Length: 453
Image (cartoon, rainbow, N blue to C red; front, top):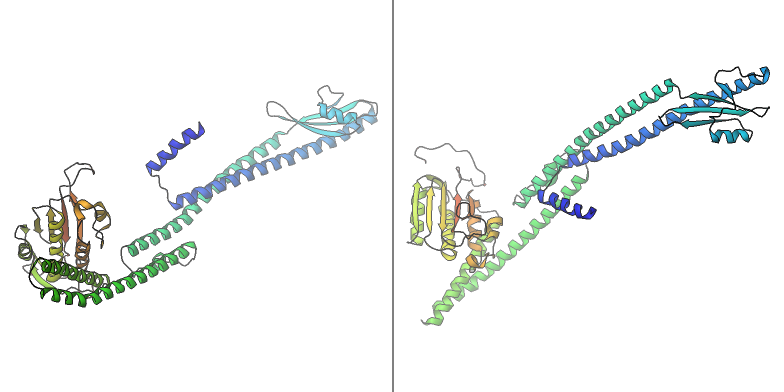
């Protein structure tokens, strides 16, 4: 039955996702250890004090018994207060010692919690003299005051330990949170961030070792990615010349179906090589926008209709923006190409202020793309991405970063529909920044000019 109840409780805790901070765990651990130590010390001190008081009482009873025995032997009668001859209530253990000819003391506990002190000695005439007294009230009061002081001290130790645990745990928790935040920034691509610098502090502990390990891992990954990027760029650059020659040679072939197939594959190979080179340049973070002022609605309308006359363009609110027209056109055309290739018509483009939305009515974006963003050479599920190399959206996202814009993806579902219901379309949203990036990639605060939307 014990195991039967433990499994449901464990499953309930896991489903509930209970989460506690390091400071509270450390505080609880210190408080528990402090409580155990305080209880153990209190019991030891209480028992030691009680034993010491009982020993003193037994010594006092023994001294009184010696005086009573001397008086009895001199006078022949019992004249000491509390002394008795052959007391029938004498404990059996003490009687056995007197029969062996020994003077002894004995402590017994009554049912009500009272403590009796006995002392007995065998006399020369064969009788046994004994003294019986109780544990003094003064000793009981002292022991009670000691217990009260021990309880108060134990509570103070537990509370003090908890406070120290909260302080120490809070400091460690803050350092770990800073380390986690810095690691997340590194994971998002901010390669200049260092976890060790982020946590700061003068005291060195295991957190610094963790930070150094994460920084070393980030440096190694950055070097590896940079090496892979250089290799990819070199390979694509080396392929550029033979692919261009292949395309030129294919154009010299006699007209016919075989020539068309060769030209089509050669053009596809050239496009792939150019895309790989562009991705490599974007990964190097060396690209800078060449800024111009444009009317966004007019620009998007002309480029979209030139790409596909069947595209539905709607300008809700016209605005003038400062951006790089060539890169903006690249992002727009890649989104339209993706919508035409993987979605279903009609493809709709909406311009509202600085926001551009491209929607199709296909099966929607793959869940992996929605969760992790575009990834090169990964096209997602077979229903939407059975063709292509996954570079179109990767290039669009990279060019958007150069523009200082934000590119998001989502699927259109009926209101209140569960996740397993198929999507009714895919929407890519490009959010242009209010202020254009400079040549260094920063974003200055520019005053609004007259006539700007």
